Image 1: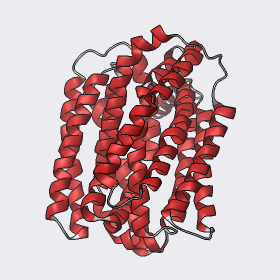
Image 2 (image 1 turned 30 degrees about the vertical axis):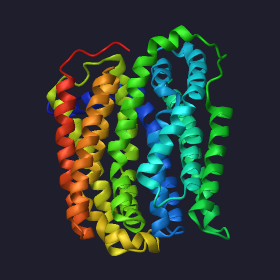
Image 3 (image 1 turned 180 degrees about the horizontal axis):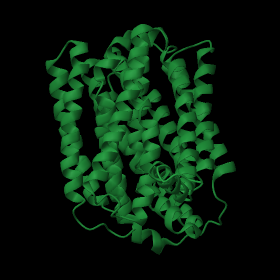
Amino acid sequence: MTQASDIPQRRPLARIGSFLAERRGLLRDYFSAISGAGGRLVFSLAYFIALANTLSISEFGMFATASAAGVMLSRILAFGFISALYRTATIRPNLIGTFSAGFLLLGVLSLPLLAVASFGVYLLFFADTVPLSVFAAIVFAEALLWRPVEVALIVNNGLGKFGRAALLAILATALRALGAVLFMFSAQHSVWIWSWFYIGANAASLLIAFGFFYPRQKLRLRVELYLRRLADSIYVAGAEVLFYLQMEFDKLLVLAIGGPHLAGIYAIIMRLVDLTAIPIRTFSMMLVQRMMRAPELLSRLAVKSGIEGGVFAVSTLALLTLGIVLHFFPNALGKNVAEAAPLVVLAICVPGLRNLVEYQAELLFARGQTLVRALNLGLLAGLKALLLTYVLTTILDTPKLVLSLNVVFLLLYLASTLLTYSAMRRPAKPV
């Protein structure tokens, strides 16, 4: 016979079991998606170690900065119509073929603007440090090869096929890692030779993405549908360019002001910071999908603060763990990384604050507030430029410069919080 005293002890367990049972599908989807993030993290680390220790620090700085610019410029492709394709996959999957045709059409039309913008960025930031041929090759790989791979990932995630998206993410990152390992064993180790390996790895990923992972639907052009969503897509494209500008502007400024060697050391530190964002982006992606269907999901302060606290804690713990490992084993990630190893832990708050700014930008996208998102990101990009220019021109000691980044990103986070949650008081727009 069950004792009455056992009942209170079992009730919490029963509630937990009921909670998990009700959300079994959500948990399954999350673990499918996070498996891709985990695999991507492993191969990203292998890619980073192979490349950072094969190129010289200066050439790694050139590549990392040009790659960051390429990622930013890739958002111009198709005038941001990828956002319409993602919303379609999430809400109206029967129209994927129609919107894929629109993406291809707008992608071709956007090429002249992409070329002009790329040349302008080159003249502004890279003309004195990176050969034009190297810069063009890296932007080509990022904008015309890797960005379409991201489209395939985005569409699969929108359809709820998180397992397929995870597998594609792992394969694509593994191909990049394989390219870096083959480059490590090649006869020449210049950034120009690496750019060809990089193009090859991204081209292979593109063939696999659209050969095996993209949904099979007949392409149908319906220009009237695209025109209806073009303004929103352009807002998203502008916001994405501004988002990556404010995310990567520090690398551009370090190269322009501090030169390739300092840019290389800085790129190594920020690449390790970037690795902490991979699991966080999986969570943000799934939250965005839920908010598209239920815009008031974050109406409670406790939920908002709980999520932000979790993002910050996980990000900070990840970098702290890495910093401790590098403190005791500075050569664990290779001889070139060892030069930057003592500086990693000085940026302790940067991953959490940086990931929170990225997370907050995604909240406005989920609510359809794309114009406000673009304006906010423009303001943050301008603020970051001012803060970093001041830091880079007044602090010459590298450890102190890295330590000051905690204050820079704290100010950016506070500005982002004010702008984001002020905007979220307005009604969400239908998507």
